[in-house]
Length: 220
Image 1 (cartoon, one colour):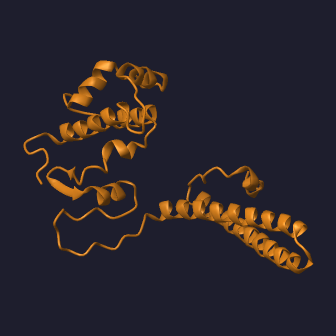
Image 2 (image 1 turned 120 degrees about the vertical axis):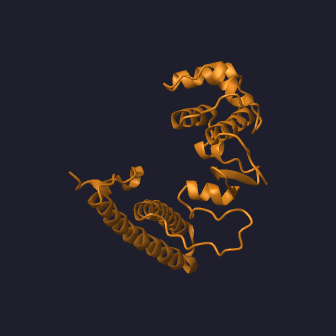
Image 3 (image 1 turned 90 degrees about the vertical axis):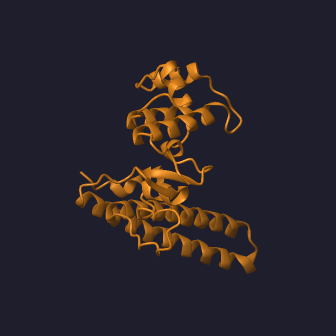
């Protein structure tokens, strides 16, 4: 499938973004936003794009679109920026000039979820993929925080159930509460150590939910 034969790559990207802006604005998800309302919203966000600029993008007449444009338009339309660049309703995308890829692998590469995709139609085996170390650490942090919150919630629920249970079931609920409470404590230690590792690598760890903010009490 040829995409944009003879067209400048900047123009192709701008046209792809423009199509997705029109889709999002015209009612994907059951809503509609006028071009003027979108222009007004970009101005509120500090990067004003005139209604005529938006119209040119949507009609494919604008030859470039900047990263700043994509970020602000995505926020104004309440969609992730990647949705403007990689429309999943299209099977393929010209990822680099002359390089056609299936859409999902291209999106995964852009989001650091996979390697640079093989060309469409290639019979080669996909290459091994390991995320960049820093991104892997941030994802581990997110996963551990989620597990810790879930374990704490289960412990609280089991304690509640133990107060309502008869004698035969009370011990089981109490044991379950204790197991999850210990798991939550262990995960708190893991999260604290991981945040220390992130800071040692000159990365600022993500904000913690209120229940876990005490993990940073000793950070100066």
